[in-house]
Length: 146
Image (tube, rainbow, N blue to C red; front, side, top):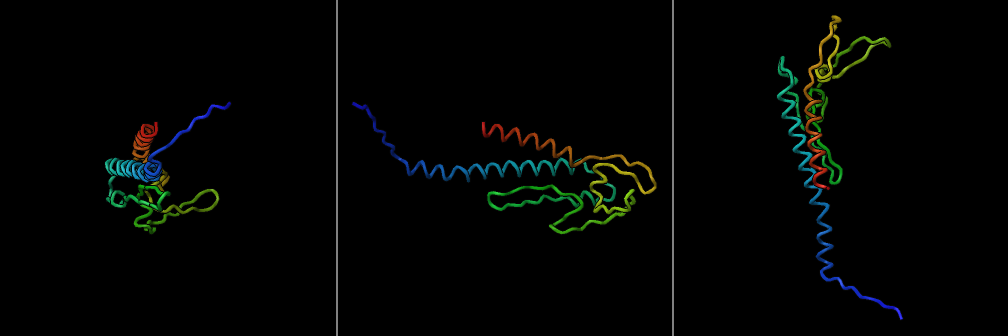
């Protein structure tokens, strides 16, 4: 003779409702954490960006692209403002001919050689801020999901 058992679940509708809410709550929390990281990156980079004329510092922006379950935040300098290209173009010679660099944010961040041939040292402002806040974001996300 087979021995069986019966299990009865009550409140299934409530459980399903809570499961449906879970992804929205998690997404909202993650968006909040990403927004905080972008804002922190922006603020820290603004503190470290070199100021000559103030154009580079004034060109900074945070772009939010939110398409529901696909979203990201960007901290931009110099090249893109308000979704349109507002940068100056610089043409310089390379062994293959010439190249065009748009804007000067990367020249400042990474360093370059001047038109006179003199090295201009890097003045990193965005990279260090990004790495600092990316590490904090990853630690926060790991804590949320562990």
